[in-house]
Length: 145
Image (tube, rainbow, N blue to C red; front, top):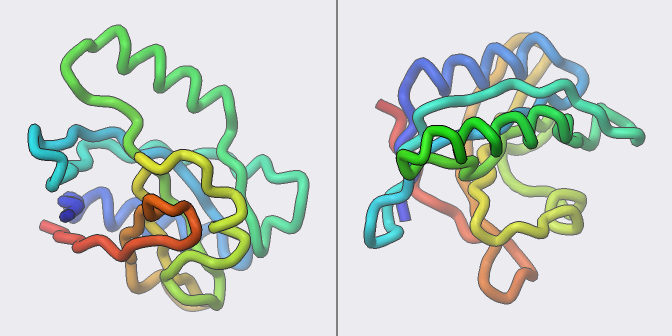
């Protein structure tokens, strides 16, 4: 399975991660799956306020209002695009899912993009999806072009 991510969206995610440091940033991804379900093309990225009631340095929660607004927009468009996943950053951590991420994952169809950030810059983007057993994440191929 491959996630195609335009360079401009990858740059946006990195910029959000850099600006939010040392806190986690987050946002939602709009895109479309290929008919065979093997290719996801991301066409939009929408930053969200991190509304977690916990430690925003180690956790995130996407603003529910943003999610509902984007769901309504997708329904109105009726063009096959939808919310397909989200992104967040890991300040001073790896660009891979954490135990906290696994505990919070409940939508197996969602793609997770995770960006490592430091006090100097954001780097490394990884793409993941909850496995069928829901006990770990599968690594997805990420094509930034």
